Amino acid sequence: MFHLIFNVKKLIIMQKIITISIIMLLCMILFFTSCKKDYGNLNNATVESFLKDASQSELNNLVSGTESGMRNVLNLYLDDIGSIGREGYHFSGSEPRYVTDLLGASNATLSGSNFYIVNPWAARYRVIKNCNVLIQAATNSTHITAAQKSGYIGFARTIKAYQLLMNLNLTDSNGIRIDVSDPDHLGPIVNYSDGLTSIASLLDSAKADFSNASIAFTLAGFNNFSDAAGLVKFNRAIAARVSVYQQKWQGALDNLSGSFFGLNTGFNVGVYHVFGTGSGDQLNPMFIPQNQTGEVRLAHPSYAADIEAGDDRINKATLRNAAASLSGLSSNRDVWVYTSATAPIPVIRNEELILIYAEANIQLNNLNEGVKAINVIRNGHGLADYSGAVTQSALITEMLKQRRYSLFFEGHRWIDMRRYNLLNTLPLDRPGDDVWTEFPLPVTEQ
Image 1 (cartoon, helix red, strand yellow):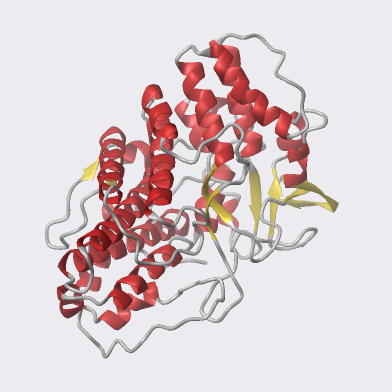
Image 2 (tube, helix red, strand yellow; image 1 turned 135 degrees about the vertical axis):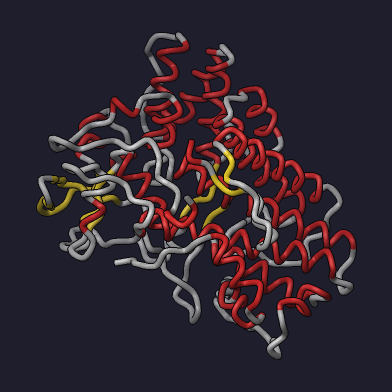
């Protein structure tokens, strides 16, 4: 059970006055491939002295802590979206609100004081605070070159934009707070449209930073995208996602052209949250073994019922030895997307980018190009070419179907159905259940 309520303003004020050793609690989970950690001696420096003239080692600790913090309570974010989007159920003997509040059971409603919004909201703003500290520290440091400053700042702005987008995905029209850099003068809560505009602008600023950057830090989950050119590709991939949320279809295609998108590129090429068993590291919080009882994460029955014969994505929802049931809900399939305690969780990967390419082209009435991209996805999962009507309406339906199965439990289904005004088509499993459109702001932000 989670009972702490975090307020962005309180969080930032607290972090302004604490010592650097406390900030480094957010930064300490360095996860290199070797899983060996070396944090150095911080000598109890104050935040102010740290910001005044940080060493490269201190800046790199902030980068590693930022990347590590991005993983915190990802399971709550994915369960929020997966439960409301009817991708699956999370049964927990210790936490009934997964199947009451999130599914709208009887008279249940979403509360701004409960763990399912308070904790992911706070976790994302913790990372945003880290990013703001990194930007200030890199700007003021005399120990790095101008090109290296640009690398740190571009990374921080990109991650900050991504974290803001995750919170906006939850609260939608209730908005988010973009400007949290000054704890004494916090910016206002802005609406959904303005939030996306600010996030897109932040990504564009980061792209400009990378144009003359030298990367002086190591990243764990970025694979071949950890140099300046690779970080631009990651940045543009996130920007393409933002563009489709904004319904800026040509903008989405333009951003894809600068990303790692490719119709002939592997589906799993991308950037990931990575996990490990080393000291100070953390395990994938989405992993639950197959056929477990008690704490289980189950695929919604409609996942298997609606899938085409021969689609290999059925393997993301494996049959259980026995069905699991709770509170009038039942499923005989486990969610099997994250198949070990160290399995990575995608930030963004090429399969999503191919589907963004399909969506943007369909919306621009480049229907044949949309079909081409859809067939890349279908063929890649053992299915024949699309044979339905080549109309915008029919292809949007097909595109959303492919997103449903390709991006299962990666944090998209609820958002996709909401942006196409299709939440009313999601199944209701019990009388009185609801499909929510958005989360309330945490109560102390209202």
